Length: 540
Image (tube, rainbow, N blue to C red; front, side, top):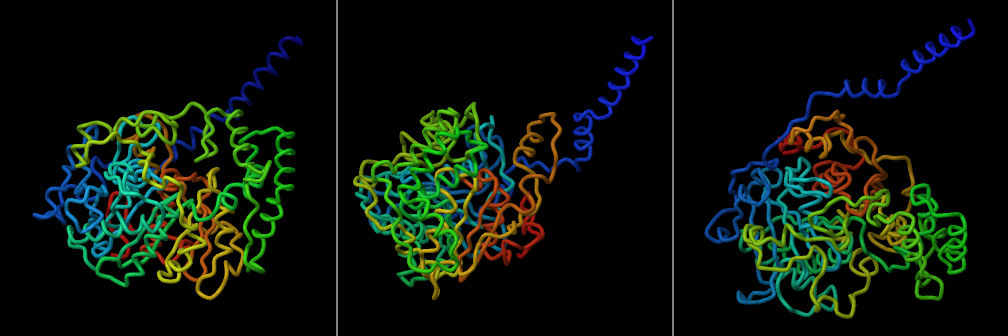
């Protein structure tokens, strides 16, 4: 009798367990997903348009249906090299890839994208972040990008300075003045070639472009020549704008303490590195200058990592690497195995760089025969280091004043350059009559991103992969914090790493809408100004 009672109890327990099965609950949520997303077999714009095709531009035209491995039409585009001077036979040239937009609001504007390095090709941004087609790490084929920035504006991706990517030449580049000079020479040739005189110019980029862009923008604005250099705004994400002492070493222990549940370093290491940060002066420096709004004085130089025992950034990174051999400094939540990456760097370190090294690919995009590396640069690119002062201590404040439209964005999962390092840099800048932010940017989440489909979801449907996926869940809602004062906006993105458009494309898309003036604030609620397939529903 007791045996029968026990069996009945077990049966009852199994019924309860089945009723509470978490997989059944998950299945119910999957069944609630909305209609299947639209899938485009073309880049999300007019595939057969030719807005800029003429006798001068024909030699740069790219056949949008003939890119190797890309089984859809990427639309109208132009690629090739132009000299950095008025000399047509100048061996020093910059390679570009220009994508016209069919958005009516983009009729008299162009947006520049630059990667950093120094010496990193802007094909990284095009191919894996915000271009009209993407081939991202972990994907086995390229796909049309529904969050291509070409949906919003005319886009140009440029390999610069000379010797970066596909840009040939041997000119010596010692500092950012050299960078700006050669870029402006190229840009004037580009404007004349494509008859874009008077166009509004927006300059965007990430990482070491935080050094490039303020110097380039300042050089352009200094000319007061709106025919060629009509700069109306800049955006720099996860930027190099200050010394390593400020950007890397001072913020790293607070960042480690915040994220150590992910990085998983032991208590003795944490105690040791914290004591080192204290003794080197990083802790006091960090605590003071991330809490005063407005700052009480000019911020002194941060303690130097060159002092004995003060190179704490490298020690933390090495420890993290031992704990997680696939630790990704650009996106700290990544784990093994590495995702396959046709560009190699950065997700696979050295890795292969095979796609853009293919002869057929180089021919298709009018690139000179090159042993292409996504990041490298020639021997004459900063052979003794960049001799220019850091941009936040140099031209950046003036660029903010002269555009009143500058964005500094930061992915919070970046473990190379930290948001608080950028914030300290902001607090030491004086622009439009005051130093730093006058009120604290630390507030409740207020950076709003419209809900949208994920790139992964669209890719799954496009390739007929049978899988249960949610719709409208890719980084929508409140995705970070934004704060604007006197023409400068600082915005953080919670789930992004070093490359914001790669990790949270909707957030990057919204930021560009703001830069271009399509939305009035990053706090604004409501839909994107374009549909995911390029249908223009907003301010046109």
